[in-house]
Length: 163
Ligand SMILES: CC(C)(COP(=O)(O)OP(=O)(O)OC[C@H]1O[C@@H](n2cnc3c(N)ncnc32)[C@H](O)[C@@H]1OP(=O)(O)O)[C@@H](O)C(=O)NCCC(=O)NCCS
View 1 (cartoon, rainbow, N blue to C red):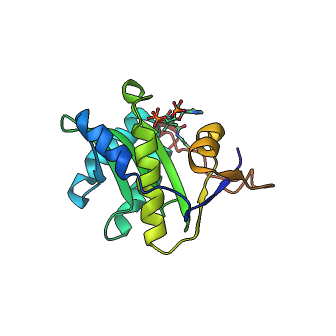
View 2: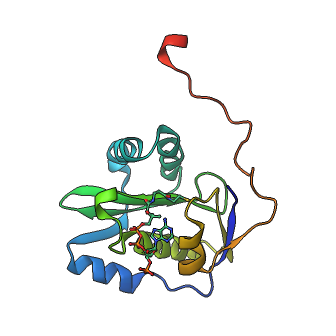
């Protein structure tokens, strides 16, 4: 899967998307340090241990480089930046029960605006899955020859029985 490049200076900051979600009881906000365990459990449970590892890196920054969507005291979506590599956005994910309501859009635009505030002009979306989502909603373009920016020599997970 390729990486994509996004121009940050032409994007909205996600304010309108956050306001619309707030009316539906979903708050998009930055994660706090004391919520690290909850973030890890959500990402590992809904997505993968690998994504949970990447997401945990958000706490090396102050403030943490992660936004979450919260409904009734629970995380229903997350997006991190400046975690996998410098200047990278992602991973991002929304709980399947909350997809199609604009949560992904709000997380994406809010995070990319935060990267713009860090003085980035462009962001790299690493190893994309839903290319069409990023093309249509952030004007992202595939970076030619970028298929293996992450891996392919990554370490395999250690299973308990092989320890
Ligand atoms: C991709 C993802 C984050 C989108 O979240 P979401 O909350 O459903 O997105 P939104 O409701 O904000 O959708 C916004 C728009 O994107 C479109 N969209 C959503 N998922 C899409 C996908 N996988 N591919 C193409 N377009 C998509 C929607 O149709 C909508 O378009 P519209 O505004 O024209 O109707 C979510 O599907 C997800 O968590 N997927 C699994 C994890 C993943 O692939 N993460 C990205 C890793 S790089």
